[in-house]
Figure 1 (cartoon, rainbow, N blue to C red):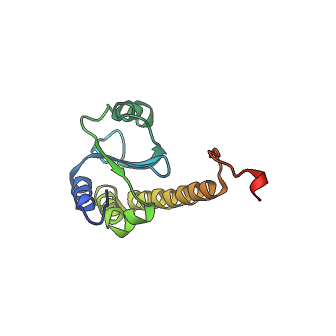
Figure 2: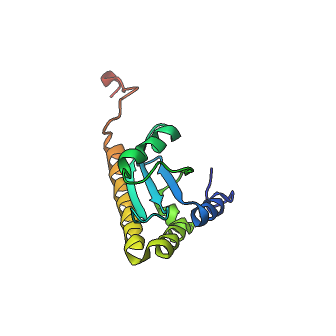
Figure 3: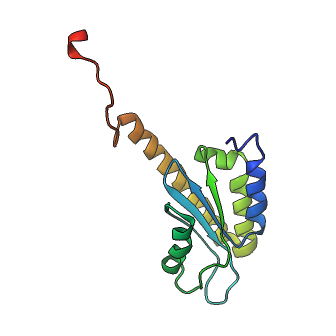
Length: 148
């Protein structure tokens, strides 16, 4: 899936502009960007990074601990982000998140969204460094020392 060429980014932007609760999960870094923009007097709109979960049902249930003052959302827009974190910005999706946060929660919420994006970049850099170093990797084949 190429977010640049198949219209995926545009569809995601449309969802961000209308959904009350959006969860974009970033495979490469194991994190989810969660925007809960439900109007409620008990709680402000909210944007946060949370560790990825295995199923949509687990994400729904996680709102019980993430937002205990609010009931579980009636609907959640779930979207995977299959590419680099930087492409989330390059395709305009991050700008749509920032605009929506600004419209719903003002400067503070827009700033929180920007901080989440910056943290995603840091997570991605850390994951790439770990991959290059082989952290968490297992050697499948090793050259025989006698071949040297």
